[in-house]
Length: 411
Image (cartoon, rainbow, N blue to C red; front, side, top):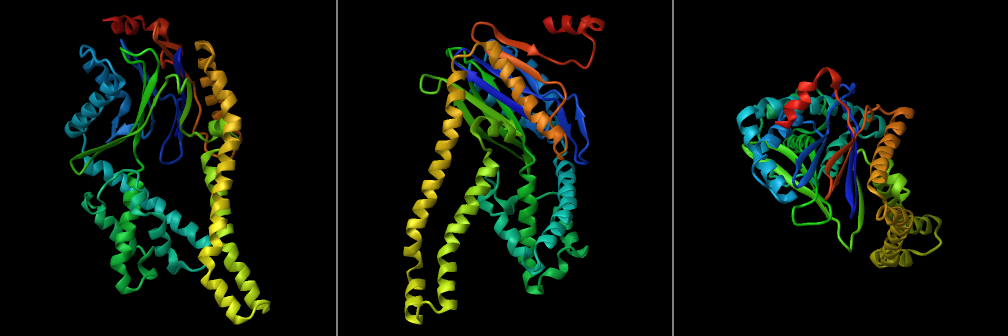
């Protein structure tokens, strides 16, 4: 895991990334490079988060090879860099990776995690026979991270692994014989849902040749799957008169969101879901109380039950009012910060980027979570006049002992 951030105003764009990477066994290494210069004319930087590989090829290698490839192409826009990069990644994945082996290892990891997932469900729920319904509801196909046809996705030994789940007894005794086809389909959907979360986040940020102000494009790249290269543009943000400042955290964004807006999106979603369930269930609960206590006679109880949808209409309006109140409170917290960012100089943008990464790292360090954010922080500033400038950068070697490294980069 990682923590990264982009802060922009009309003068410059600041980018910062930590150096930690978490392996599947929760072992954390500090020393990974996630922030790179892509070009100085136009000034462009690139950050990566999520999966550090693209189909098992390290992204650091791919980015540095891509940088050499486009050196003489005279690209002028961030969107041009993005399109060229997607084409480059597709070609490299086709030529250098074994997709079957790559996805087989991912499927095996998901299988191991599923066992723990299943056991946690049993601890929280008495009726294990409803586990299938729970999975089916939790992983709807319209919520997949990428728009793919589930039935078309095939991997080497993929179906055998899912069938092995039945043989291991994890799911075999939960379903009736006639339900096993449905169980297989739902388990397969569970696997694909989690496979599609193994994407690489890419942020390309800078200033187009013909523009004065910064912008960025972010991509989610899954890589090559069944001979099709899958990616999507996640977000595009442009600084202009209507949007003079912007702050975007990436990957582990909860701490930064809480600092900026008073609450992070995960906690907000949990609270709103609780309020929604409470308000939606309240009319039925009241009718049940009336019925059990015989406060109302049967005809009136039946009238209330028939009118339940009409009774819920004002409740739905109150839910929307509560959501609006939540958003207003977030804006009250965020707007003054964003207003000040609009006018701060480049150096302060750099310092704020670094401080917010440190804040996330501190939270992970003093909590019971894995210290998945940490190590040295790389920070860069990009501006129209000065180009791409490192304000803080780590090296895995002593620069005084390796002058040839810096000489080679001038060639």
